[in-house]
Every structure is written in structure tokens, then in C-alpha cells.
Length: 160
Image 1: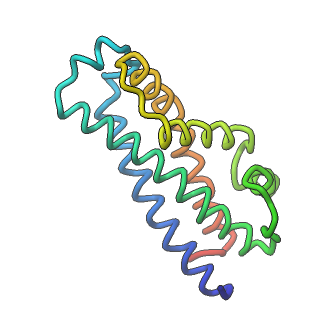
Image 2: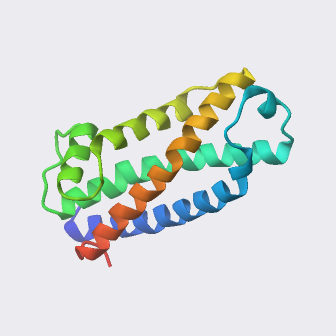
């Protein structure tokens, strides 16, 4: 890809990430009274609350993936960094050094949460509640990290 193509793809990813972050924020405000969860409360939920929870978990997964794979890589490339051969963790460390995120270690933890959400499918209500509480705990940091990298991309003139 050319620099201009990467710039455009990163701009599009930033727009999508901001929309997802805003939706996650609205959804979390609507769900705040439901957390923290325990298995018994979760088991008693009606469909509407379950659908909101499913949406929240899916948005977390999508937002993390979009930021880590598109925005971070675009930021590094447009900043003149070489990303070929860098592991995701090393990319996070470079982004931290450049001021794009507050903590690479925290972003790695968010990735662990994303992996739990994407790959673990508990059937017992107590385990489902633990999984939901994990996402709930980490969602504010994911939203803040998303907004921080978008702001830096814009302030550095890397995207319009």
C-alpha cells in the first residue's frame, strides 16, 4: 500500500472506531445498573438485557481488533516506524513510547480480555457473569485508549 492508501485506510478505521466507542459508551450507561454481575442475577435476565450484554461483548471485541490491527499499525507506519517483524506487544511498546497509549502493559491486558471474549463460551451463569464483569471492568480503558490514539493521529496531522 502507498502512504496515501494507508492514510485513507487509517482515517476510515478511526471513524469506525469512534462510532464503536460512542456506541459502547451509550450502551454502558444503559447497563450500569446491572453491574457487577453474579450468576444468579444473570440467569434471571430477560432477553433484552441478554441482547445488550451480547452487544457489549461483541463491541469490545470489534473495537479492540480495529484499534490494535488498523489504528495502531496505521499510526506506526504513518509515523515512519518499521512494523515488519514486530510482534503485537512490541508494536504496543512503540506506540506507548510515541505517546499513542498510556501503557503497553495495560493494552496487553485488554488483549487478554478480548481473547477471552472471542474464544471462551461459558455455559454456566457464574462463569458467564465473570466474563461479563471482565469486559465491563476493561471497557472504559478500551474507550479511552481508542480516543487517545485517534486524537494523536489527528493532532500529528497523520489523518484529517
